[in-house]
Length: 468
Image (cartoon, rainbow, N blue to C red; front, side, top):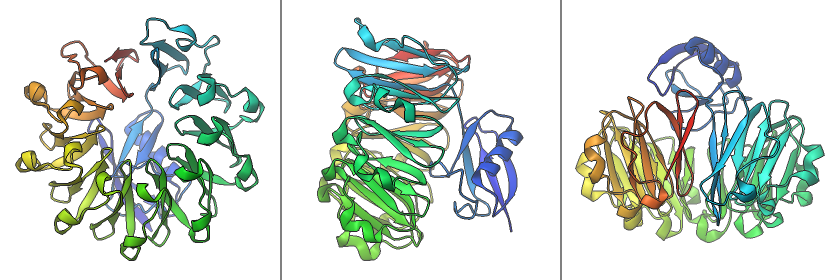
């Protein structure tokens, strides 16, 4: 049976494609790249999830009439922080890596003695980088204790397909489905306890200091800090046929093939879902705040659990949560976009859980982004509505007149940066987190990457501008 889908680019360009249900997502992706005349990219679902390239269209739950999005692979900017400042790394168009620091005293943080070539992807822990090269090898640099030194496992890092990072460690999936880890042992840098089980790994998710790997048979292997979800032994008998895993700060939630959910880790961070277990049926998607989870069911209703102060209790708005399409989370609150483009919020009012002051403006919402304690919504006409903590970007009134034709919004810890249709940028929020105005200084911006206190913008010519 053939499935018809529309694939969109951020620019607005789109293409309609037909694909057999038994075709792989990778094949659909290649067809979309050819039709859109773009370089390498990845397909995303309508709610922003990267689709597993190895799955068939049917297993990925791509249905007739679905709208997918393509994230074109651009030069990447990623960042990590040390006390002396923040260091950035950029993957340039030719695959080389350029690094620089925001600190006056760059020290060992500002450069790589032998800059790698042919870089495909960079991942960052809190204070280190790991770059995958075109030949599948890996180059690391930064703080040794956070994964900046991979020399103990360097000989094993061959044919690397993907890297995931916790706060202070890395986990690499190799081409044969095995896993290599390094960095802080307590944050998952030591997987020796489960190494024999890590075969046929398809995907890895990370909490603050633990990892969870989905194997080819749908089972799960965990390691790292036991209190952060590194121990799944109590739930292991239920962890079969896993489709997707989401992580809060110290817990994991796994969606099974039948749409049910299994949780483990810190109870106060959502690791205990027993109070709502009977409701967790037909789950399509799960979002996590710092200490709670919110699940969208097949009928568009929402089920929440975890810490009340983190949005784990949605009872006050439950009657409104119908037809939910997407959920975004700040550290302590959630915001759900409904099918009619309206928004429902809950959780800590100071962190964006109360949107009553702007509720009448929240119509035709297309996308929501969150900082640590505030939200920013893009409306259908390209304008923006914000709410939550003023110091975290919840008040955009100083730049409201400039927020027209917004294409995308990125968030740092306490600020937002919006890319307009003409490639210029508008920022607001905490000045120390990148909220300082750059109006008129940035043109031709294609993509923005955020760290905790700053932003880095990639321009159309492949150059990079750092601002904070």
